[in-house]
Length: 431
Picture: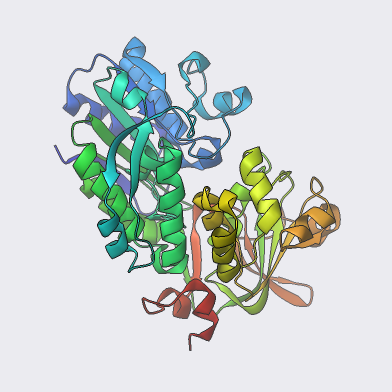
């Protein structure tokens, strides 16, 4: 079948009607289906417009759409208010919350030799490929996976089969794939459609998911652009990646000395998710610079107690410290996704990260390796409603404001073009 539908605009976002027409055209091409499961992202990807597409699929299929399985990955279950805000009047009874620890079955194994090759020798062990048991045991004749393609810290570019094997996957695949990306080097992958984690995802799809009736509906969301690409192979993903790099990637001619990032309190309640403000700006910030994270909704570190405890214990102290902790702490070694998160959430000693929140204490924030500032005075000093996205001259200082850090990637030209083989904590030495 390959590409079933594609609609895009490079000058404006797509209208709701254009999204619906593009989806309906693809579903018409598929022919009749009797039992459909939709896999959208969760509320932390509300801007993806996947909620609109999920509702449109429900309008198209009616009672034949019998389940909506948000791709939670390691995130907490969606709340009723979030379901209503994202999916409108779609019945909340259709929502099934994925549990990455218990709701999975194993469908295959990634060979250790393949992992060793993709990681350039950093990892030598394989791991199981797990998916939510509904994909194997539910009797569905269509899985409609919906998600946004945008630069991503683990997979290089988000979307496509990541939605299935990580978003609706199990702990073993999530932990190991995240750790693979972290030890390979986040900066070497972000903004690139090809990389070791994506190759592992593609291996799993080709070897173990060929019999699943899986269709991908991929959005590209930009301030002045929009796209929808639907298909059953990599072509829809590659076309979406090409457009996303035009719409979501800002390549800067000079590094930024002070970034102000704002985290919407409706979506960001933990540093586990809120650290996208770090991931997406790390290649843009100058040595000795500062990232100020305005985080009115952040009230914890991990999305669950186990991850929260590991973050509190080890903190965001850089790659060498995280790798030592993996060797010394069996609890962290059993949760490699947490170790990857600790690597991703560090500045590797290059710049200062200041978290501004009233829900965590100064001692708690500084205890994990960040600087702390109370929220109210920082919100008064850097008022999100008055700042423009990008460069701002504010009194005696120049700041770069990012109101939605999860929707893009910002990089200084020299760091983005760094040679392969350079580890993230070595990037300060690039000439």
